[in-house]
Image 1 (cartoon, rainbow, N blue to C red):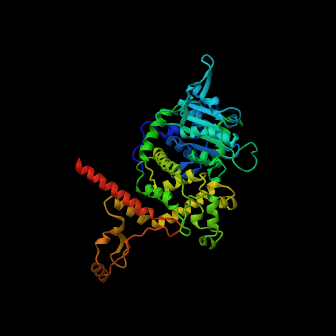
Image 2: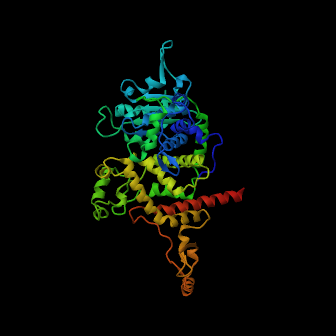
Image 3: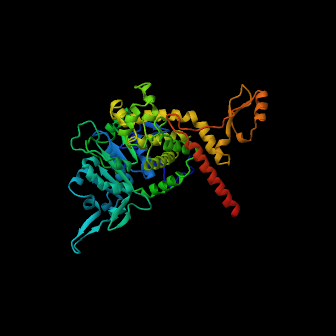
Length: 491
């Protein structure tokens, strides 16, 4: 997928609790470890040599806003605090590049009063602070603020603050990041509020630390007992500023996101267009779920087996912001995989599906009835299962999809492709030029023991998922190629 790796940033720069383990095994004392290394430790494997901590690190490098959710004591605030101190140098007012807001404080004062404005007694007005230049905004326990007051954080999610009729861009060199933490769920948290769908939509990556597959390993937990002295509170890692390196990596990731390779691009097209399909009622998945659920419940596709609902009823099509976050996160994951091990082989298909699994779990895409009744509101578990089924459906059509899209870049139109068999023993191979084959040629092929399917590749929306987007995408590629060729001849 990606082409280049920064020579300024190394994986060693990015280690958190793993650095503490390295120091411990080299004979360092707890005092030395506390003075020189970060705290959060979670090396549970997730994907392609990446662990849980790496999922968050990739988001930081990609400049993707994140939310860490889970029970108290699961490590979400510690992870965020490690980034705050060890990547971004701590408080902006103390020389770092980060600003922290406690969610409950937003019940007492506005975000402007807390962070962005200070009273100028001499001139009798409110002046902007230099906190607008911070590259990280950490909103700890965001849902301790009433939902309506969480709206203050919208601007942080957008990275743009509107003041006195003008827009002010947060951060520097195009980089700014919002990390939020939240306790969700089981009725134990009486002082929390719901998080608005639009707020979730601005938090591109959600990592749920209650999800069993994201929990620290047994060895991680044992190491934590010996690495540092006992302390039940949040621990502060040493301050260090590597923002320049992060910005350099971020620029490479954004460049790479424009060319993810054919496999990843095909999956992205499938996720954006293929899920927006209803073959029975001529409607789309973009309807609100409470309407869509009624349609899905009476659909004959779902009456076959109530315990195994039709795939089309489990998830709807993501909005543009989620698609963009998925594309950006895929590029960031790929970058980190190669930074960690330059010899890694990365499947573009699997990479894009994994990115969507993490960007889509809390984006109101999952069927809410199934999520509550079958999965007990465990978004990551349902998202994982749905992704596996989506992947199976996609793989059945992958060879035709990739052949059609790739052939278009060579000037071959989508209606020109067909399967061809040299003889009965050979496997079918994809060939082109169907529109040039006459009936006589077909008969001669058959007489020699070969066969050519008289029907070109067909892509339709008659199944549970839609594929009519494939020839449309191919036609778009053909137009791009034709335009490029014309411009080349003119020059």
